[in-house]
Image (tube, rainbow, N blue to C red; front, side, top):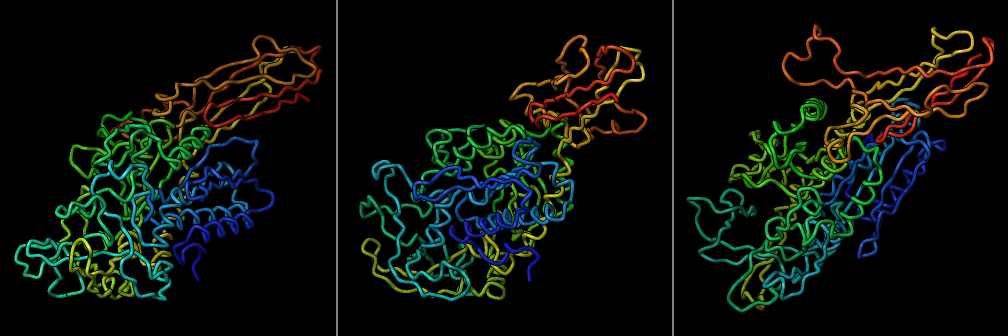
Length: 577
């Protein structure tokens, strides 16, 4: 039996909702939480967020955000988020104190419409499965649809129960760019030098819209849907539809706007994890610039986390600009990770689950090279693992002749790479997710942890008393979280207020302001961490607040409120007995 429940299969929308409800029933009664419907999609599905408040809804605390499945076919991320929820519940049941020190937001599926369409029809789309453009605006494009019924299979995957699932068409031509592998004829791969006929062109199963009888559109001609949600966020966004499907305006989609609207109202978010697949890598900002242009504090924190993430999971952690740019010189634009870091000031990583490239022997750096130049060697390795470990789901399907009204004689089959390449085979879900579960502990460990205490000063005299209020940060991150946050939202002071004074008179101000506090995170800059340099950043500050009492033996009390702009409010009560 799996250690964590949510690792046994890929979940349809209804199954996911049912499992979220079951998880909510397991949360200890003393723990407050909210199951929030962030938005309803055009196909009437809700984007669900589970928000957990270990110390209660009224207590703001540093907050972790974990989400997944903003790309419709990247299904394993949903399982990973649910596993994190279950792990947290176990920590709370057993009263592991550090997990009470932060709040949590989990969004298991950002794009429910796109995921459900693949589950039911096998229709691939980048994100949500809709398009607001007219036929004329789209030009000539493929309308994907089932033309030949597929064999139903009882192999544990819901998609294969539907005989109307959408596949591919191949057409024989001497100028084709695809070929059947000579060693494994069931494997269709890209044509290489020295290959022999027959050659094929491959197209989506379906019909061509606005067809002139001569010009066949590319298979990946962007006709299935209009927007990639991970190019639709407002930071570093650019209107470049034909290359990256960013949309006509940023946040044009229900899904991306729901995430941005909700997250922007939670200033306590200090860490954000955005699950994708596949690759086996963590990717972080910056996207458009090299690390040398990042503030030294933020860069040091990211580089420290890079090492920890790789140590825990075995996945390398890379700069998006340096190691994950698909087209050299053209950084990704409008990504959620850029929005989370630059706008909210949260440290954000994309995790590409499922380390298939490494499993077939690809270990290059920069990491993006692991996706390039898959030749017959790599594809034969993928074929063998599909045959031996994946029930032959991807390459074990026969081709059926079909007389296409527009293309003439073709053959139709399916190569469902989403269960084997884009996501691991179901039997490997448990293995892939298990090394992610310990990350929640790391994310809690890096939180800023304000602590407020108050004592009577030894300098107090007969009727002049001093309350020594000590504000400290026991956490890894500074109380302002990141320089990116200070840059986007301004540098905010810590505000101290004296409240509810009894049997004494406050002398002077009732409000004080102090600078934010550093955390114990290191600055990575050569010898600067040498012990002989000593402490040069303050994690603790103490202020003396004077009160006057009637006489030396008078008892008095006061309540102090300390407000951190991005972390919440903390209280300390002083009683002089």
